[in-house]
Length: 280
Image 1 (tube, rainbow, N blue to C red):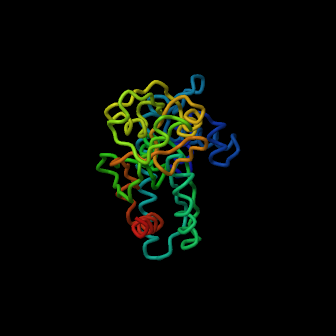
Image 2 (image 1 turned 120 degrees about the vertical axis):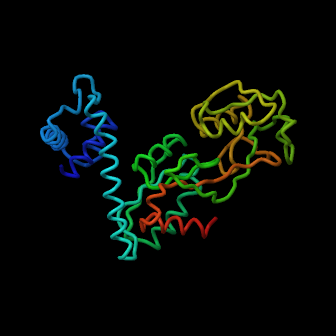
Image 3 (image 1 turned 60 degrees about the vertical axis):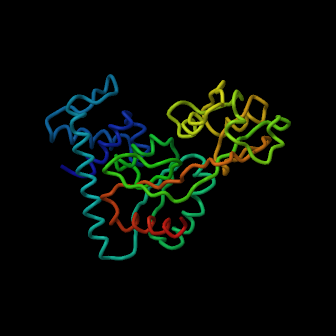
């Protein structure tokens, strides 16, 4: 069983689309099809229901084994690379949209300058998506707000904290305050990101604000606040052109780095862990 066939199978299993998988892997679609067919022939089982674009029962069972085999291969490479000293290879990093925009770029620039043989890839996603991608070895490390996940296979470190601010439309009664206290938000209309988002959880923990509008992203939230639709709770680093930011006394959120425990000895990951320890 060839490792490249398993790698291709895993991408097709995730995308459930041969064309998308080919683009992601930088293969011709015919090559993806041939590799999957070769794997099916070797196993004597059909792995994909092509008519309905879904995995067969055999395909579902193989996904977990493919993840384990490929993870062990990466672990073996890391063990060998440990003797070579300088990190190299691919390092896939994920982060929330806000962190991708404001916090991660300087860190990656410093890392790339120090370790030029590492090929960096930065991907954006929601907190749940990022944790899932790290668990599935689709990412090596991710950066999020809030506490790390409760998962024995993952390790997390708090790198610092970010103050929370209430953004309000220009001219709003709260705009002239130098600082807000939680009790002053009682009955105030707020815009919020959807349930399950870390920023929504921060708002829901407050006693008083009334969520009357949901928006899909912090960027959209900031624009809606600037247009006069209500207030919003965001980390201080978030851009909010046209809105006024007022600090919320006593409230902040942790900035957290998460990675797989088994990858701590992988040189590229270990170097990033060390770099963040310096900046924390």
